[in-house]
Image (cartoon, rainbow, N blue to C red; front, side, top):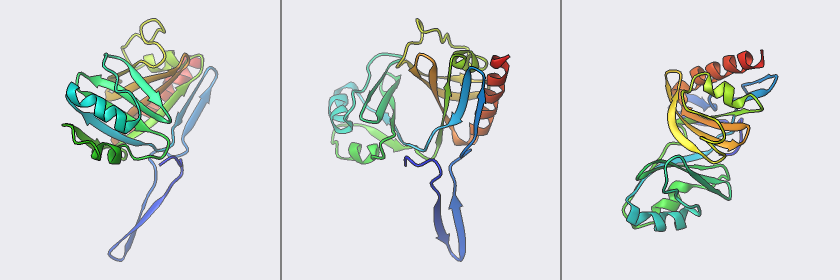
Length: 194
């Protein structure tokens, strides 16, 4: 959950399977920017009509944003608006948002995607330039302020982008694209440093 190097062993028949976090321990520091893999987190993809949002927000302990390009955070849990009835919920506090949603009887769909996604931090004065090397979105503070979130692209990969500080971003991507996304950001960070 919140441990970067957590390993899980499972015994399948007589063979042993070990699960390691994708890209564990990879980081790149360049003048003005640092790119690194964030610790694993619990995540759900949440879909719900407006009539269900109050009950879900109460169960999750965080407001479900109602406007495009917004997010809300409380107690280690962040809700990112992805569409009129769609949110990405990220829990970095080690709690289970899927279990919290299961207690709600209001109409909704909550799907656990914790193992599907990988999060990459891009931080430092050159963070926006680094992300913009592969993302066409305007990342100026005026257009994309702290707390802004959107589903967009980075190179050829779909990502969810969250601005966590004036000079920091959280890049969420599918595990299968994480090496590509990390490599693109690392090369962009090296270029931004020059």
